[in-house]
Amino acid sequence: MSFQLSPMGPKVMKVIEDFRIAGIKLIHQELEELHQLEKSLDEQFNIACHELLNCTGKIIVTGIGKSGHIGRKIAATLSSTGSPAYFVHPAEACHGDFGVITPEDKIIMISYSGEADEIITLLPMIKRLGITTISISGNKNSTLSKQSDVFLSINIKSEACPLGLAPTSSTTKTLVLGDALAIAILSARGFSKQDFAFSHPGGKLGRRLLLKVGDIMHEGTKMPIVGSNCNIEQTLIEMSSKGFGMAGIIDENSKKILGIFTDGDLRRTLEKQQDLKQKITRVMTTDYKYINKESLAATAMSLLEKNKISVLFVLDNCNSPIGIVHLHDLIQAKIV
Image 1 (cartoon, rainbow, N blue to C red):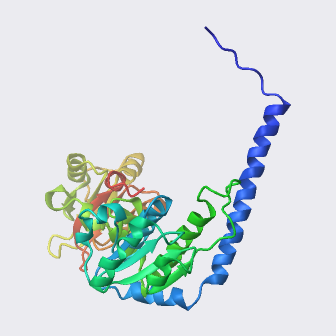
Image 2: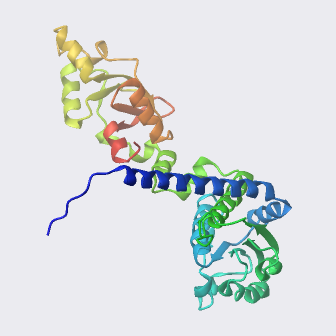
Image 3: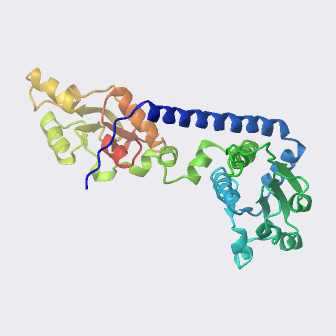
């Protein structure tokens, strides 16, 4: 049996247009709720931030259903911005996972109704440990709100769902409130890009902010180095054996680099039909780019790209070569 797709007619186009209108309507409704969230932030938000900022243990986040899904993201955001946080499922907490919670922790409990059984069940044990409780709820008169030390409201006029049932506006409001908490704490903590990179060592940003030239440079006998008494022919042999397309020329006594000789210098030398037995110092380039080992690998990449070159010598404070880094090394390190 074969099926034939009918061409898209006016009726189908109208349906697609309706999808777009429905989507825009939802966005407008949720934006209005976020405007209300902005207006509703009060001293309780300040208190919550102060408690979380001064937490000596972990920040525990818990919630059930859609609130739980949002809670996981809030915990992840807190952890990645310098505030160690864990999501604990309330049902699992009642069956052993509560053991991860200590008196030094702070806990964020999310329930729009404020009456979720799984959440309410945890309250007596949390109170017994003397843990500061921050509730995120849409009902300020709920059991959870009344039993919490800090109450943050996510009350909404209605869900953006046309049935008024599926958590939409409420979960968006909760997510944004969680982001607001995390970023307010981040700002107060003075959390930097470098701190963020330590939380994301596997990501591109982490590599760009943490990896240094000294971590990937080639050292010792791998460097193409010749003395100032060598001639062009000897330098070519060194260049060929090391495979970097260049060589550094150093003073035999001070070990300081005097210049470099590249594939480009070789082409220019051959074009002028110069004698390959002459000293390398007569044809070397003295105006060259270099870097130090403490520089970020990303800085090395920028220097290579800006000057349209592929290799850099790494020099110490005395201008002696201690390493060499190639464009391929940076690509392999996934700096780009």
